[in-house]
Length: 154
Image (cartoon, rainbow, N blue to C red; front, side, top):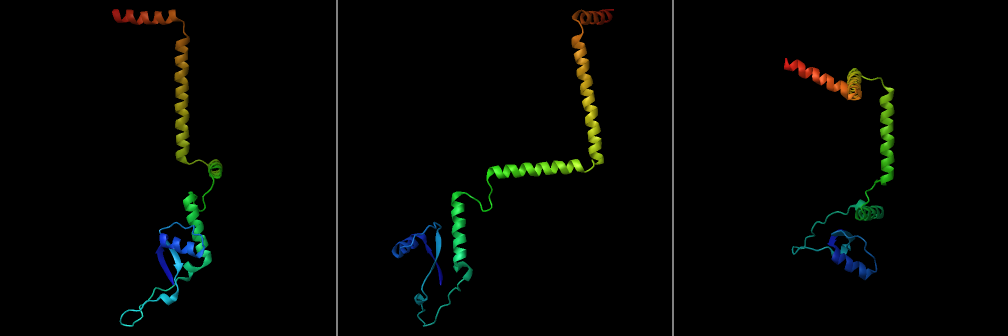
């Protein structure tokens, strides 16, 4: 019969039996002998909870212990090392880029590309004009400024 008991009592039982308990959860499974079934004062047998064979199986207990151990260490089941995750992310990003390069651009993408080209051309023209103005000798700039002042003075 499967019964729950606290870890303090379980630890004492395990020490008496010479077993080492590595599970530190608040409740632990253990088997109680069926001879401890209690009868009510009316001499009726009280119903007991049925035993779950899955929880009793050694493979399930081992798996549960491994999960508890990995949880305590901070390792997630199926968790990957950081380097492997980074390399996988890079590979996925490269695959996406290759897929984008293979398919033809949509109408929206074409319009955005044209707009981007126009803006770049406009910026190049602006920088070229600014550089031309800076490369003009100073006396020519002063002369132009004087012309504007004289025109404003009339």
